[in-house]
Amino acid sequence: MDRTPLIAGNWKMYKTVKEAVELVEALLAHIGQPSDREVLVCPPFTALYPLSPLLAESPIALGAQDVFYESQGAYTGAISPLMLQDIGCSYVIVGHSERRQYFGDDDTLVNRKLHAALAHGLHPIMCVGESKPQRDAGQATAIVTAQVRAGLAEVTVEQMRSVVIAYEPIWAIGTGDTATPDDAQTMHAAIRQTLTELFDATTANGVRIQYGGSVKPDNVDELMAQPDIDGALVGGASLKAESFLRIIQFH
Ligand code: PEP
Image (cartoon, rainbow, N blue to C red; front, side, top):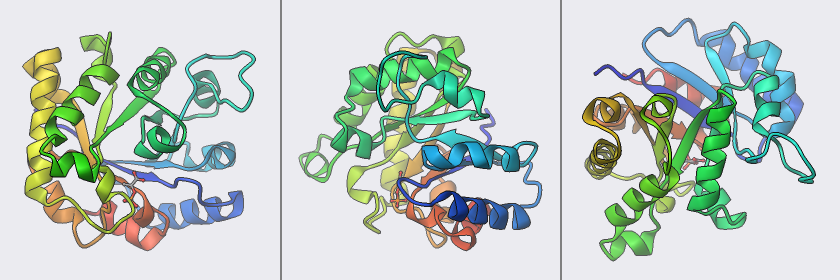
C-alpha cells in the first residue's frame, strides 16, 4: 500500500512569534508544491495562531506538540483539542518522550489524549521509544510494542486511519546519535506487526510510522529508503529553514 511520507518539524520550546513567522516564510519561499510527501510544522502553542493564516492554503500543515484530553473546563494551563482545531491545526503530537519524562505523561494519559484528538478531527502523532538502558538490556522491542498497544487502546480500525506513529528512541533524540537504518527498520517492522495483531494487515499497512531521533540532512535519505519508514519527526534540524528543507527534499 502507498503511504504518503510525512515530514514533521517539532520545534519544541523554541521560537518567539517573530522567529516562527520568519522560519515559516523562509520555508514557504522554497518549498514549492510537493505532491508525493506531506509536510508539517509543530511550533509552540504561542505561535500557532499567528502562523495559521500563513499556512492556510499552503503545502505545510500545522500541528501542536501536545494537547489536554478535555475540550474545555477548569484545567489551568491546559490547551484543548477543540482550541487546536479552532485555530487550524490538523495534527497534534502525543506522548513525546520529553512529555513522558518531564510532565509525567504515561501510556494511559497518552491514550486519553489520542482519543481526544481523534474526537476533534485531529491526526494524533503518537510517539514511542525505548531508553538506552532498555535497549542495552534487549528490551527495546518489548517496551516499544507495549507502548503501541497501550497508547492505542480502544482505537477502532476507522480511527486508526487518522493516526500516525513516531518511533523515537530516547537515546537518539537531540544527541546526534541516530539509530542505524537497519535498526530503525527492524523496529518499524515490529510496530507494524503489532498493528496487524491489534487491527488487521490492511489497516497496519496503511499506517504511517515516522522515525525520529537526530534526523539530519545527511542521514535522511538512507532512513527514508527503508520500506517501513514513512516519514521523519525532526527536532533540532527543523529549526533552520535550510536543513529542514533539505530533509523535506529527501530522495
Ligand atoms: C524530536 O524532537 O522529536 C526529535 C527527534 O529531536 P531531534 O531531531 O533533535 O533528535
